[in-house]
Image (cartoon, rainbow, N blue to C red; front, side, top):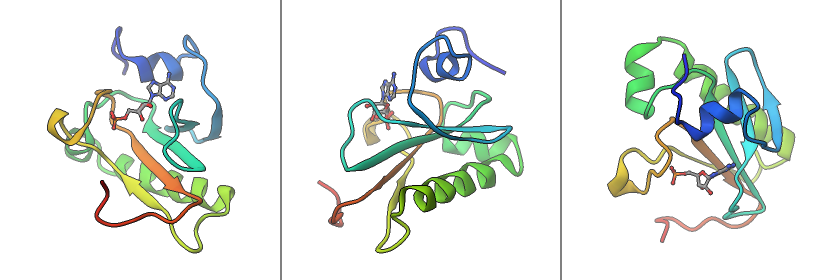
Length: 116
Ligand code: AMP
């Protein structure tokens, strides 16, 4: 399932280039073009869902896979210790700009909480 004008669907289809760091049958992880930390990777389901709530509602098990992929990326990047942040901006008021659900995996530096 894909949407014609969705940037991340185009990355899944190899129509837009991306630095892919990890892939499973149903998920893809690639580096953010505007990194906010030494490690900043986006993790997506290959199928199109507009946000985390739509993903969780529509496909039992795929949200789990996205989170497992995020953790595998963190392991691969060596940031499980001391820790990493996994963020799903949900809705424009929270800063979501690409409406294909994605988790930001952030780490490799001290991460303050709450974020700015
Ligand atoms: P959000 O604001 O949560 O929707 O996050 C969207 C993220 O996608 C931002 O951090 C952007 O820097 C990132 N981004 C936009 N275009 C691309 C692209 N072509 N490849 C990788 N990351 C991108």
